[in-house]
Length: 439
Ligand code: ASP
Ligand code: MG
Image (cartoon, rainbow, N blue to C red; front, side, top):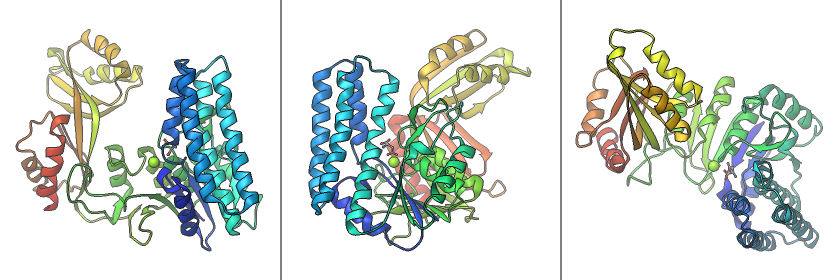
């Protein structure tokens, strides 16, 4: 079985939904995982904000404009009168429901989560009806029946595995299943989601638990690129990546794949293919248990980073100091990405400043603390063999005109991280593009 995941732009209009039906035709049995139509989840977030602010007028305007978009697409999508009618009823149903939150006196995160899942419910039903019109038999599986997180807000894999298998067994002759990405229930059974961009995660979780032949993530670029095309002129797609390389790249900013995604696929060794909806024949990027060649494969950048430097004479020749520091970050559930140390100081990076003030206050009880914001991690990813000379020189040479705040080399053979001021990011990516990839 295959898992095929399509993002918002792939279902972004009637035209795109029709293309999608073409693209997903074929013999092999599959589960198609869909995001909401592009712009929808953002619009639902805006509607939620208006409702939190009790700005009824604004909420109503936003709802009207979103509904109008759907009404238009529906008219372009279906030819068959009966199916068009069903489509209209679908839109009416969801938008009446969305409107009910405007009248409801309370709006909390619980209501917000219910609002946020409407986009995926709409897109999957619209696609299902369209397949129906073309004569393709499909089964729409509600993700709320099997996608669930546990007490730690992590996907509850044993539950998901058991439930999805039961659902699939109900349809022994079916080969075309559709379900919603992103949406799930939490440990309490309430409606929840896997965080923004979470449809990739749904696809990878499902692929892992049903032991899929392949998980395909379809977007509108041709796979993972060696550099960020928004900042450098020339980039190329990467044919193959090992799971470790892909995890580093996704985590450190390659926008094409949600970072949490790799783990479930990697655990069960299910290959993940990144494909381009606009060029289905193109090779894209294949991620798997692949022995990729030595060398640097790609660079990626992650913005919004804070560096925290902790300096103390007490660290000199002492043990346990790092533990004391890490315990403070752990207490505030703040994860650390890059670390560098000297005998009297430690610098580390975080990307979530929610508890930064409290963390700094506690650190200041034991050391001097300096915080810098607007930092960027540049990750250089590949098979960077430790017994081969030259990588460090090549990389540092590309940074020769840029002040470096941290360098982390040697933690993994797949990643060298450099932290710089965000204002130098573009220059750094361009310089690495010529220095490492010859552009
Ligand atoms: N629709 C959700 C979002 O926009 C989930 C996704 O597209 O992956 O974040
Ligand atoms: Mg996405």
